[in-house]
Amino acid sequence: MKFVYSERYRFNVGVHVFPTEKYKMVRDGLLAQGLARIEDFVEPPEPSVDDIRLVHTKEYVDDLLNLRWTSRTVRSELPLTWEIVQGFFLHASGTILACQLALNDGVAMNIGGGFHHAFPEHGEGFCYINDIAVAIKKLQKEGKLERAAVIDCDLHQGNGTARIFQNEPRVYTFSIHQEHLYPIKERSDWDIGLEDETGDEEYNRLMKEAVPRIISEHRPQLIVYVAGADPYFNDQLGTLKLTKRGLALRDRIVLENCRNAGIPVATVLAGGYALDTKDTAEIHINTAKECLRVLGQLPPKSAEENSPNPNESETTSA
Image 1 (cartoon, rainbow, N blue to C red):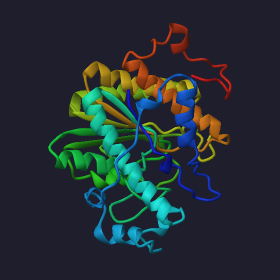
Image 2: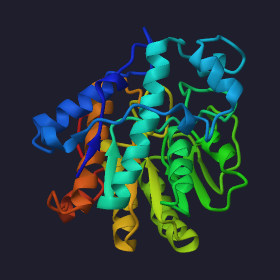
Image 3: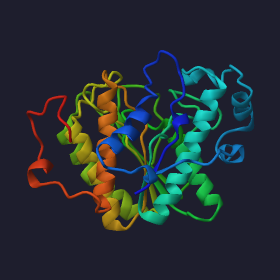
Image 4: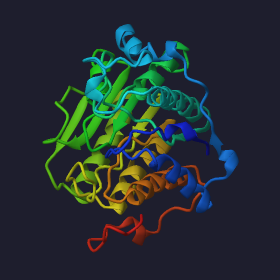
C-alpha cells in the first residue's frame, strides 16, 4: 500500500490548536511499528495552480498567491504565509495522487488533506484549499473518473465540499458530524447531524446503515474517505465522545464495504485536536491499519477485538 506524504505538509502555523506536526508523527509511527517501509511513502508532485483553479475562483487564488489578507482569506483562522500557501497546494497535489493510486491499487492514503471547509471563493475553518474537490474535479477532467462519493466522518460538517458539489449529480456528498457545532451547515446529499455525546454504539449503527446505501444507490467509481480523528472523546473542539476503538470500527465499516463492492477508496486525514497530539496521531495510524487490513496486509481483527468495550479508557489503542 502506498502512503502519500511530504515533509512540507508540516507547515508552521505558530501557536495554534491545529497540530501540523501530526503528519510527521503518523509517518514516523507507521515506520516504527513496521506497518510501512520507506519505499511505501510517495512524495506528491509539485502542485499546479491550474488544478487549484478547477475549484477555486481566480480572485481567491490570486489573494493566496499574493498573500493578501482579504475577506476571502481571513476566515481561514490561520496565518497567511508563503510556506502555508505552498503547503495547502501540496496537500491538494497529494490528495490527487492518493486518488490516482487508489484507482490503480484499490486503497491509498494521503497522510494529510481533508480540508473540507474551503469554499470556491474563500477559506474557512483552518482550510485554504479544498483538496477533496480539487482531486475529484482533476480526475473527472482527465476522464479517469465519472462518479465519485465523499464519505466525510470528520467531527464537523464538510460544508465547503457540500457547497462545491451541490449541483453536481456525479458526486455524492455524505457527512456525519456533531450538529450543534461549527460550521453553519450547507446541504450535502445526505447529512447526519448527531447530538452531543453520541458515542460509539449509535455512531457506528448509523454508519453500518449509511455506507452500503451510499454504495448501492450512487454506485461511485471512487470514494474519498475523510477520516477525521476529532470525533474522539478527548478532542478539544467537540463532544461526540467516540473511543479509539469506536473510531477504528468506523474506519473498518467504510473500508470493508468499499472492498466488498470493489470500489477504490482514497483516505485523507482531516481534523484531530486531542489534548495530547499523540492520541490524534494514534487514531490516524489506526486508520492506516484498517486500510492495510482490507488489502490483506494485516490479519483481520478477532471477535473480541471487534466487540465494543464499555470499559475502554482514553489510552486504549484500537
